Amino acid sequence: MSKSAAEPKPATPGDAPSDAPAPAAAGDPPAARPHLRQLALQAAAALAVLSLAWPYYGIRGEALPWPATACAIGGVAGLLAVLTRQAWWWWLIHLAFAPLAWSVARLGIDPGWFLLLFIGLLLVYRGALSGQVPLYLSNAQTAAVLDELTKDDAAVRFVDLGAGIGSVVRRLARRRPTGHFTGIENAPASWLIGRLRTQSLANCQWVWGNLWQTRLAAFDIVYAFLSPAPMAALWEKAQREMRPGSLLISNSFPIPGVAATSVVAVADHRQTQLYCYRLPGVSLVSGGKETSVTPAQ
Image (tube, rainbow, N blue to C red; front, side, top):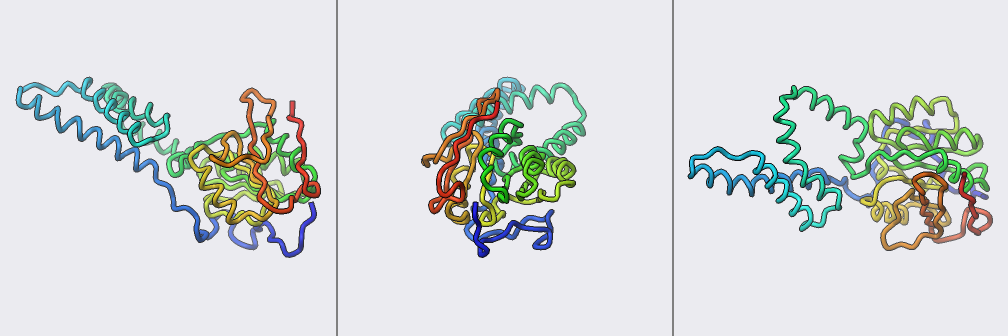
């Protein structure tokens, strides 16, 4: 790939603290709060069921049958999730939450253990709570295919949005010493593990930050392994910020309503597919031609 001197350069520690998120970009989507929506659905279901059950059993002088009540709350919450068009996995979560909560409450477990578990999950899965982006780890086969996709650019500028523990950028940085690789992560435990794994690599920048506050114009390749939920918003961001000819690669999750420039199959047990979206303009790879890739075995 040939690069013009006028093109933006990757961020360096001298530009901004590498552990701090970049300033918010104008037009970036507001922070998603799906957890508040789901809590509201559970609260609405509990309120609806209890407002009917308590007067009914109170008038009859009977104790509230909590097993049946918990199942009724779960059923109403699941129905509300369907009616409000939540993702299918939320239907299951809403159906099971109240019955499971009642069952666990009967076990008499010290509440401190639940707090400890919550803190542990938050440290690892913060992205799932704040943006419907769980922790997915890219495997070695995927990293090998990404290396093949970018082999024609010795000085490739690559960013992994939601980089987990550095599974991709660490492997690529070790294979491609002349490239520049950046990992963006905002879950504390994952970020710390990734930082420790990449700190010895001079060509790898490990950033504590939010993917929505990361400016994409500095990169030739933008890689993301997120979830179906943010893909439309990511494509809008890519169209605003990525340079003509640069490449957006999504692991497993296509952009809704947008035809991929190419789809690359990875020979792994998950049968991973990489959806590649070339931004309109002159290609930065192989003189404007797509690079064919043989999936790694």
